[in-house]
Image (cartoon, rainbow, N blue to C red; front, top):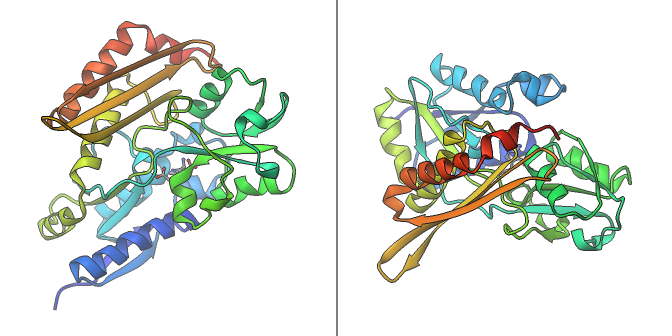
Length: 308
Ligand SMILES: NCc1[nH]cc(CCC(=O)O)c1CC(=O)O
């Protein structure tokens, strides 16, 4: 009889939901037994600013430690929280099909961004969202917040804030998609590299599991997020940089084509470098690297260092 796979997960509602989705896919599509094992991370215990703990990477490293010490066999991360530098001994075994990558507004009274009166208080903890929101010039007051999805939505329900921005994928997975009052067009708000995609990791030397999990991988999603993350990497930016990127693989006359749009901003959104590129999905990394270099040549790195 084959072993029961132990899937390490954080205890938050989003993490357990995402882990549960992958566990279900492993049971129904791969015919293997899986149990969830809770792992506590510094980012869950310490409520201080994430940037001071090394960014959202703190969520990832505790799960990776649990993989490496053998207490779990696989882990599921939000891909956008995963550092771009690979970790020794760990393999990104599957990137399943991506959810809707867009950001959404959850506002009082069903309002859209354009309907919020000037001076309205909109919460986000993301420098990327804050800079792009400021760049729209709507005269909104941007309020720094963090916390899990439920806590953030609660600030609108309670009247403390007029609205908040968050990832649609998280809302969808939690079954709360209908609380969004507007899905933001990527022309105005480019998502974080990897947003809406999940990453399934296991130990590199667990060859049986690497092979098994590969069946959950989606080639088009992997190409898109590889390209987006290569832009991030080339700009030497972290997950909290004011940088957005969105790639997609589309059908073209000559087979498939990958296109990507990216934006780097100063923290206050007053200065912007916005660029796009296309190419073959097989060259996802090269396309991202070239786009990143072009953005660097246009001054993107200096921009992102400018204070909010
Ligand atoms: N930064 C936290 C985080 N990491 C992944 C998601 C949403 C799910 C996803 O993007 O796949 C969220 C919440 C949010 O940004 O609103």
